[in-house]
Length: 234
Image 1: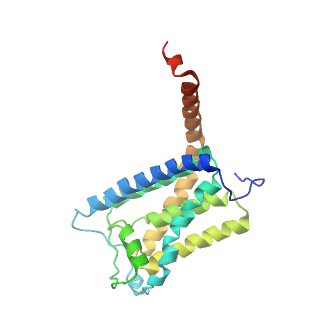
Image 2: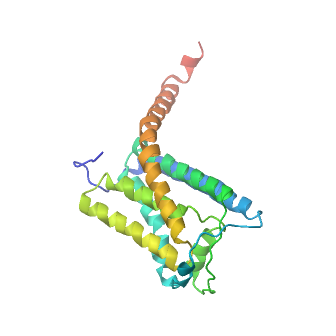
Image 3: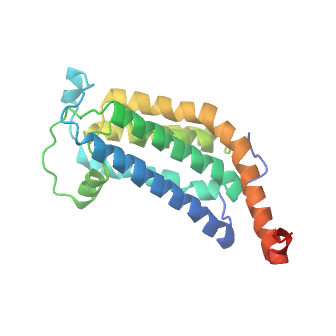
C-alpha cells in the first residue's frame, strides 16, 4: 500500500521514537539469541557443508568494500523514519525477527562453512565486520535476507525511481559479501528468497495481527492509569 500524501522520510517525534527503540531492542535481542545461539551450537558439530562452486574461489578479495557491507545497519536504521508510528513499525520489526529465527533454524539444520581463505587484514572496520559475522551461518545469508526485506518494505512507501535506489543498495551489499569473502552465491540467492518470501507472506499477516494487539495493550494501559486499576477489583 502506498502513501502518496506523506513524505517518505520524516521525524516521528521523540515520544514515538522512544517507543520505537523498544522494538529495535526486541530485534537486537532476537538477533543475539538466535543468530548467536545457532552459531554457538553449530560450532560444536565438527563437520560442515560446503555449497560453493569452484569458480567462486577466484573472486578477488576486496576489503575496501566493507563500508558497503556494513551499510545494512544504515538501511535498517531508516525504518523508524519510514514507519513513523509504532503500529506501522511493529509488523516490520516482527517480520525481521521472524526472518532471523527462520535463518537460524537453517543454520542449525544445515551448517555450512565458507570456502574462502582470507588473508589477515589490518583494518579496524573490517575486523569489526568480521567479528559480527559468526561462523557457520552461511545459508541463507541473513545479511541479504534482512536487507532485501527492508528494500521491499520501503519500496511500498516511496516513488518508483527512489525504490530502484534501494534495490541497487541491496545489490551493492550482496556484491560486497562476495568481495569480502563472507558469503557465496547460494547464500545470497537463498537469503534473497527468504527476504522476499517473508515480505510476501509473513509481513501481510503481521500487518493484520500486530496493530490490534498494540491497540488493545495501549487501551488497557490507559484504563489502568485512568481508573487506577479499580475496574479489575470487581
